[in-house]
Amino acid sequence: MSFFAILIALLLEQARPLARSNLVQAGYRAWTVTVRSNFDAGKPHHGWLAWVMAVLLPCVVVLGIYFALLHLIGWPVAMLWNVAVLYVTLGFRQFSHHFTRIRDALDAGDEYAARQALADWQQVDASEVPRSEVVRHVIEYSVLAAHRHVFGVLFWFSVLSALGLGPLGAVLYRMAEYLSRAWSRKGVEGLQAPTSERLQRAAAKAWYVIDWLPARLTALSFAMVGSFEEAIDNWRLYAQRFPNDNDGVILAATAGAINVRLGGEALRRRGASYGEEGDEAQWESGSEVTPGREPEMAHLRSVVGLVWRSVVVWLLLLALLTFARLLG
Image (cartoon, rainbow, N blue to C red; front, side, top):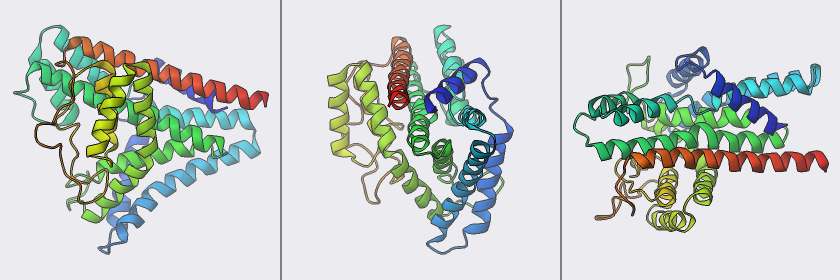
């Protein structure tokens, strides 16, 4: 019944999106801060211990409630619990307001407002970014956000749900993704001390492993619903240079799928955050961007269509698998 849970959650999220500041988000932010301050005691293995604790408790709680509802009340209530968990972990509306704000500002010719919206979204200085670069950054960040908020959650929820583990996959993926961001910073909200390298390394490596297959499935789906040959060519070229970068694979496939030139900070590897230590930190000289046209407003509409067509493909595939199980 995972397909129906996903469909209901997506419809609910579109009709009544979760507020950006909500109790669930505040709860897991406070929990990760607590774990960080209590389990990172300075030894090399403490980074992994803290990561496991930060992810384990939410997963155990969610899974325990699912099994209790399933065995004590019945599968319809357990499915509603799946919907509730997906509602807070899955969805476009958690980031689409940024995209809409920037797109509307560019449509109105207000480049200052567009730069300010981009700065508010990514917490960067965008005061001197030219219009084409604003469009490029919006495409890059929006595609990555769609992957992390939709496709990655869909994958892990579907896989672990098929194994009888309910919404465990959605929580696992969301917590791993959050820790990869929260513990990659120099400091974490609520703490004065900087994040230790142990935590940064553990969170980055765990996130790389968990996101490896979903990232490539997202890239493949973009290729299928876009310009297939160009997307695969870009993917192959990028993977040869940086085989351990998940985000770059998605962006390279996106660039080929809609024929847009992408590159820069979102496409460059940021240290060894998503792969093995010692890899190069950026593209080779002269290859900082992918082939394609200069980013323009038409590409914003193209990327929206690309993402939604991919969602339809994923939902159709899940529907076929669900009905096959029901008939089998």
